Image (tube, rainbow, N blue to C red; front, top):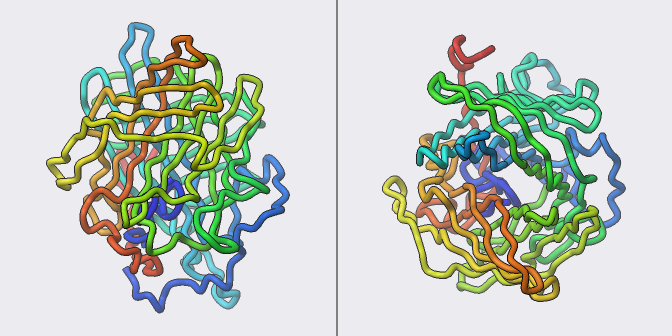
Length: 392
């Protein structure tokens, strides 16, 4: 999830900087459906596009390694942001939606971090989501479904990813009554789906050298219309995959006065796939001292966390093997935030337990939608296609 600078929960995974037009050009939210209790989920339909909602994203992260222990983390995210819904304009080149994508690779063993961003309109098959074809894509970055399995492909100048992903559990519906509430009031929520344990195999190629890898990935999919409130300043979000085959998703929404918003929440998934909703009072996410200061943005990020879920007997510490996993936006399209791999060590009911996961931190960099006044501004920049050498 991401706040003032991500589109709204995981990515606002980006709205304050996402889309360059004046506030009056932003689409009226009354033209879109809002996330309300009682939504009837159906799969595979709800893995794909929901154009009746204003904002939507698909978010993949994972921890992978080679047979000899070379470790990697990755992130691939696809975003759809509605721009207009005018029935009088409906050609292939009319901009009804913008599609943003982020791609990142953490070479944890070599201590290198790479990231790339991309923004496109749909155009004639340039970017989009197609339920009939079971495909999500932006240029040559794509997710292709086949039944419940997925293949992931992303090609960039410095690194390529080619993965097969197999779900070990059924999809999880986060929140209560079909919605993940983010603030007070009807519709200030998202419909939020997760695949919390994706067995992943494939190839990572870095500067022409290929690595055969395996491990676990996580997929989040959210769709919604209303955004957060001006009092909410940023968030800290974690996906945690434990060796006992259970998972946790936890997020804190930070308020400007320094308190934690009561709409912070989480989900626990046991080894059999049964879920438990967690409210803000059910868990602790607490930075415990170590920080990393970005030489690019000047932001200081807490990179050592204590995690406690007393009702589950879980006590964990989360540390990152690579401090420098900040995605510093190199254009006005993308915000600056930290997203990276973490290692987990601790106990469950007194017995030692380990795991891995991903941590996302937003709202730490200055100038990142500081008061959310820009949350209704849509910045539009249509990028040219990438060079033919990386368009395969």
